[in-house]
Length: 380
Image (cartoon, rainbow, N blue to C red; front, top):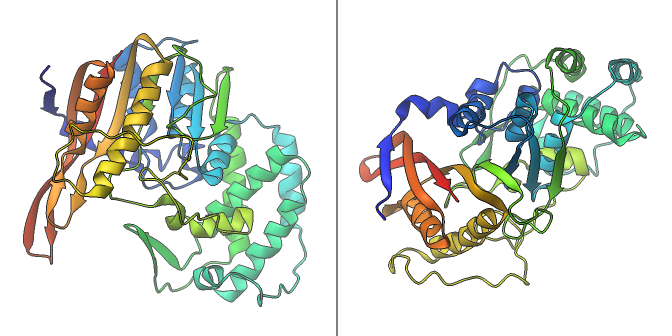
């Protein structure tokens, strides 16, 4: 079966985080690799989704699909390997008591200054903040960790991350952290005051419908928590081929939440810790000349998409945002290869919408080709 490909460049901004910047709850954490609420709403409208149906995101990220589904009145299941992003998504979709939030906020803002020793602080944190803000961040973190109710503890941990990002000296550039020069950096406690006030106001302003939501920390290649033929729709975006190692890029956030980086040096090609009980399948119909890392990536994605097929109901729909793989000597058409894998697994009527295109060069002048970002649409 021939795969239908068409351009939909009008949707380009929707598969970025940009439309979320001014939306309550959605903007509690800046996840530059994520897509927008408007994209999820658009796809749910295309699918003619109805309240009470089930949506799955096997790469939950910072929770945009979860929060969008709750706004629309759809039940939701999310799977996320990262404990950091699992926590962030959970905070975004929770119900809170405004009085409790204000009580904890007042308590935290009344914390008296204490001189925090920095001798044992991770070097990356010392690099990320000036000394005054770092001491305030660590002092406030200590107070937050004393909150017994984990729901409210995590709310203020996310507020801490949000405020800390606004006084950071590190910038996420591509797949690395780059130290930048900043003038007139505001005091952290002043930013924390503003951030928590806004987040509490957001809780009151954004209406969320009562639905069933299950968020699991787990591996998208083996979604044992999700039953066969149990979900109506899948809206997701897997890590892009050869693009970003998310755990390393968010190392500062890991340190602030967990006190350690939790970066495992042995990782699979879709950004997950490998599971020795899952045998990597050899996809012998892949182009023979593609790099080994690309073959491993598509092997991982074969397992993910096989799981997606298993958990979808008959007639269920998929929207998956993917990017092409950029290598020094070529661009690998990941969207077409993934659509072809979907066909072989059993999905029907695959369609590719090209939503973004960019010219890729090396050494600034040598053109490699045009890389595109696409939405793959599938039906079981």
